[in-house]
Length: 158
Image (cartoon, rainbow, N blue to C red; front, side, top):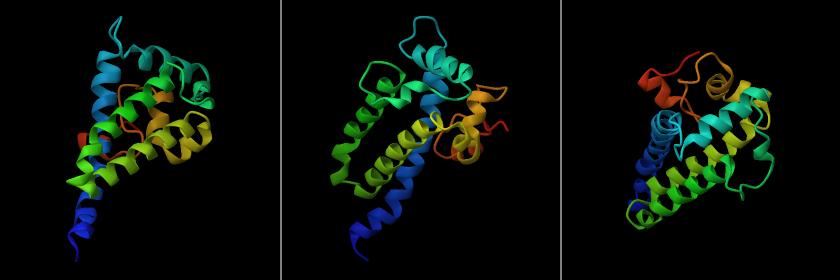
């Protein structure tokens, strides 16, 4: 087995796990914990995205446009692009990990976008994220793509 194949067999799943841990940490501690504080740069998530979703039954109309404005969708896209750029130099050292991380980051964006354009799809395919926005406890269910870290950290509220 080649070294490259081994890098991908080990690194790709680690990249998926790292992305899931990152979205859990970012969502819980940055977007909610810091985002609820008045005047926080992260406040857009709690004060804009969550409010709009509650008012529109999970739909966030901002996702209908390309993320080119400095709103919730633009800030999310900018952060994801930054994460991609920060990890790019690692491609030469741990290509499988970076490929897994990139795959998961792109999947995150596509799933998150679809969830906020098609609530029925979200309710069936990402019920943990649907519950995060539409359930009784918005301070649970931090994962979007997969509920792995919510399950491991016991923050999945059904």
